[in-house]
Image (cartoon, rainbow over all chains, first blue to last red; front, side):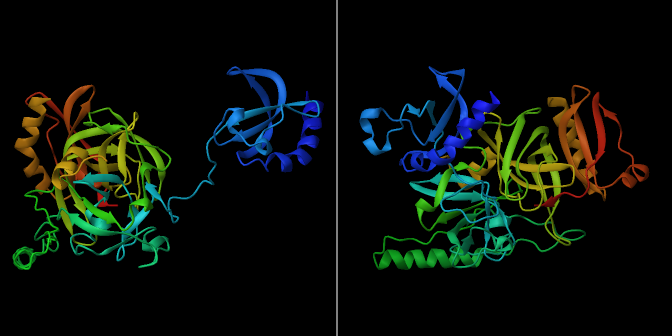
Length: 339
Length: 70
């Protein structure tokens, strides 16, 4: 058999250039021929195509001959081949699981796309898209994040739209508290009144949604061009729906730093004190806790069950734990749904 | 599960005020619903005491390190 493989290899060396001229062929190689879905013991030249089409839909130049000299061919549909790309790279369109961030932060992870009204938004953490309460609506969000070489405005992918402020603890270990947003509210109200007088249909919205206790670290940003983002998640694929996480549930995430990792929900109803840099902490309730499956930069990752249902939004962790918001709390705080 | 949640609600504020406690959650302890108290380091365990059972609900203390925003 080896000598037959060697013989085919020699012939393929010259034949591959002709085969790759066909518009549908994305790869050539040697493999066992498949007939009616079953692998035979006959070696063949396998032409991988993006989609297998009936002969009558193909241009005569794109047809693959049944034999090349005495070697049978086989046509194998594989879809479009893409080079594996690191999640820290620049993606257009960008899927979930890749590097993103407010232009003044290092880098976090693009979670997934969500829908609000008729518009599509990028979902991630407040501390990724809104620089932990300090950003303003309309601020640039870049992909990849600044730490991964992203530049503003060259790599701008979206603008911050809304975020849920994090309430930081006061005194002791606590740091700065939430800056008052009353002025923002009053300004928006005044400008909206003004807009109504002059007949403008555009209203300024206040971009902060207050929470009484921290249940979420989340924000949404509006893509500059909807064609620049994808509903799928890098290395995972499409989200199938949303689900409540339960103790013992197997989960996975795709993130900017550690890529695709798996874990188990070890605790629910978690109240946790989370550090946001030096002397700045915030207490979160109703969280989910899993084992080690993330590192710095994975914040904002969508957490899914093994059947691709969305269950959480990753935002914190230690060497041995990963902490995430319940997706139900995130969706209700931001009033969003899956696209 | 309900009793574990009740015991957790009653005690978590007190526990989280102790320096070094980073999280309190509901988990499984030997296949029973219980309360897991996460602390920053092993030294905490020798200096502090949390009961191992309250109202029949098992309580486990585990070291996780500081929990940080990622």
